Length: 323
Image 1 (tube, rainbow, N blue to C red):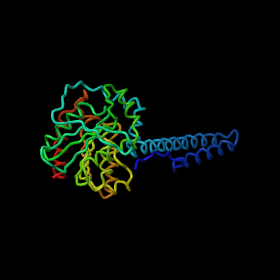
Image 2: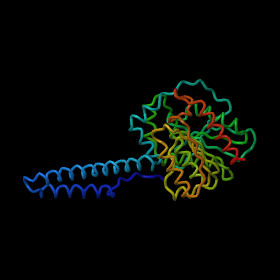
Image 3: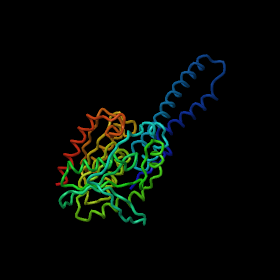
Image 4: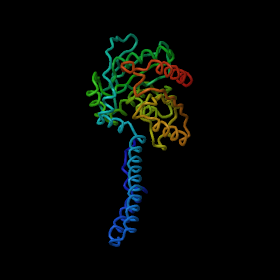
């Protein structure tokens, strides 16, 4: 289910590079002495082939880097915590004084034997429409709890369930958040999501939503929900890249991205669009002139205008699929 990055052992560029080196080694030992013309020709040839060798090597490195960046999974996204640039891009969240009014904490049993807690905001009337919400980099903090309540208020016929993939841990600084995210195990996350799906029952129509770390897990939750999945929203999260997995997806997908995002960048988005098309699945991709985590109100770089527009699109997307 999860993509594992594999280094290229041999490519056309590397073959060319090795052939170039062998050629240079050969001619270096066969230059006639004291021949000006030969010396000039050799210098020209050396520079020319050295240039092509450098270009080929650069392309090879870029290609490998592209594979690592674009062919990502939730696991490889978690590995970004070793990148100081990524961690430092997440400014410490602004404080929020929030008290839940409609949401409650519910304890669920999981298949691995360790209980999990969800923050559940129920519809006032019986409904089979469910949205599973996945927190971002910081954990299931007060911002996510507030977002769950606000989303449910905007969609009265939906019950919103915020899952906790950090198992109760919430970070208030980026270094701690990085540690929590890097420690996440996919088996545990899958057990938590399966518990949430079991909690809502087999008749539920399931939508998913998440941001950043949770964006990638929103898509994985939609895949785990199987035929019950109706809608999937991921905000600047890692998309699934396995075409075979994408073919099993039953939900339409809305992807919200920032053009200035250095990680889930336009190149990654373009590949996602291509993969979804190849899998025969419907994707709506909306990109804003904004950076990573632009929709997080706890972010000092919060982009209010882009967030409000994305929210409207998100609500319309869910309304059309969770009726």
